[in-house]
Image (cartoon, rainbow over all chains, first blue to last red; front, side, top):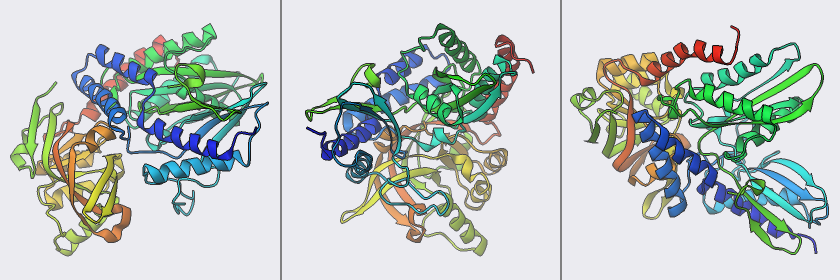
Length: 299
Length: 201
């Protein structure tokens, strides 16, 4: 039996809402640990407020942040799954429903005229990244809404050459964080993409930023660089909200891909502390499992 | 940490001048959500010698994004949170001087020209914890009124708040900016961090 369009709409809608109201457990834990460790009094106060806010949002069914983003999803389609109708339109319809039901101020506008579509849905919005899952008979959806504070912070992309030393890449990451200062609402998660190509490295950086904070890159060389950059960034003293302190970043997550012999594409995506995501698996028999734990980043 | 201070609006010049960067403030009373459109309109009033339809004199303003709906029972707040104050840098000094603004609630801090106007008039910058909408929404107890509705999403709202905070004094009325202090401290630490990462500059 094919997966009904209605089930995709409903799941997309619920995931968007859940992402906006329930901070993933790994993010909340990292914030709590940062709060315990923080030695700067103002920073400690800010982290305490962030933890209180995040618990309150879940308990009282409130939004974590007033920037409810434009909708975005990572869609992983099992090659043995059969889908009814148009799943892309269905995900858009789910986002529209959540926007209307919660209700949210829709943020989706035309890039030039700035005309608001009124539905939070538009051309290429929801922003989708679509992958295949070989052999699986289910579909996985991860809501990863994009807020504007951290998106405009600025994130950065540069294609280095093989002649550039690796420290130039480290400097690029560090300088991006320093230039952004308090704008992306630190403590941030620094997502770094390395390798592949111009178009794909941005996605790697975004995927890295959303990866659970308790997972290091399995490549030991890369894992070491994550730790090294995290220490460097927290050594700057930018602190929560740019007001000083030990906690500038909760993690540096790096995702890599191989690349051309002469190139080193690097993308840096700064994600605010309100790192919102929610995921579910939709089975061919119509069952939906909302994921918890690390399996494709359950909350 | 600085002192924890509970204040009622409107603030006096003395209230504002008594605060120092690092103090934590909780506000009770009325604060005005005023965005770019509201700044422009208020400055237009000042230029023409007209009074805005609400009492901006000595008030606390809020750089905020909110969802406030019109209902049969009046305005209803769905959610609210601070927006980036730096977007209003150009318009804040004349607003502070024109209306003796005593407090600005926002996020991210403001520039040197604004700091100077704050020092001159007696005004403080009160930083909300960015993104913490649930917490701050719960401290807004009502929406008194909307003004300049022709501005659409940029209209001004008078909000009734209780223990609205924590708000960290990021810039005080004595020329101190925590943002400037942190920024120069970060700059002075960078050479050492570069060295540790074997960065050649």
